Amino acid sequence: MPATTCVYVGDELASYGFGQGHPFGPDRLGAFWTLARDRGLDHRVDICTPVSTGRETIERFHTSAYVERVIAQSASGEGYLDSGDTPAFPGIYEAACYVVGTVLDALAQLMDGGCRHVFVPIAGLHHAARDSAAGFCVFNDCGIAIETLRSRYGLERIAYVDIDAHHGDGVFYAFEDDPQLIFADLHEDGRYLYPGTGAMEETGRGAAQGTKLNIPMAPEADDAAFLAAWEQVERFLETHLPEFILLQCGADSIAGDPITHLQYSPAAHRHAAARLCRLADRCCDGRLLALGGGGYNRDNLARAWTAVVEALVEN
Image 1 (cartoon, rainbow, N blue to C red):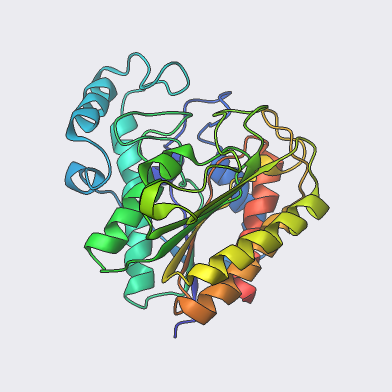
Image 2: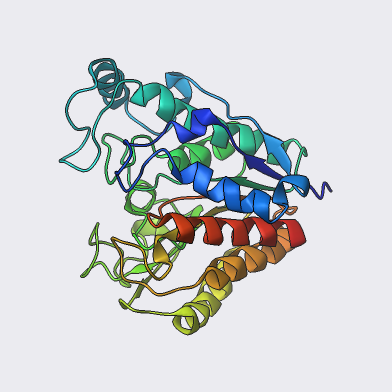
């Protein structure tokens, strides 16, 4: 079993951003990688180059009509791809293709035995629906990864774990009635934060009832509250024994984020990553893919994502 942790870094990934001054700007990757290098992680991981993909792969999750719309607005650079959160810019399609392609290359590294754990910092775009953008997310790389693990690698039980402050609605509703997608999401209570979903009662529909776990956290929830809730997440995952684990580790749940209200420290992210590594060792041949997700305070995301990578390396 390979012991290597891979991290994807490159200008192509950084290009997925909505301009300087935007919460999701192109400087986010650089903020993370500067701190990671300062801590010597560039000598402890395999550094991988971003990879692009094409629309056929993206359409494993998204509708053809929506992909066509993104291509058209990428050429013009005009308008919004949703109701006002996700602006088009020239080349947004190509930038989003790099996010998706890099995540799929990470899957190949894990499934083919090239590495054991992977971190992709600019990824985890969990709000995009099958037919639309949402919340700074053009293509839902998480959903595409789930569909790819099934269609290309033949996996059935996949766990998606999300600790971003925002509910992973684009993943949840795409697979709400799918009993093989094990979904666990710790997020700020939707009564106080976008997208307003993820109530505790949302546990899956039909045959999928009980395969989805939503834990809304009160604004101001701290590490102690996170650790208590995390025990429930672990018990839930152990009940379902997934074959692969995706972690969306958005850093907007760290205290001091400009658009959320949770009060975690990076220790929460380190704990989640470390515990999932151990679970992956028991039931997934060690395979764990971590995706950066949100986070709009640059110092916070650097510290949280670096803590995640350190946990991946050490476990």
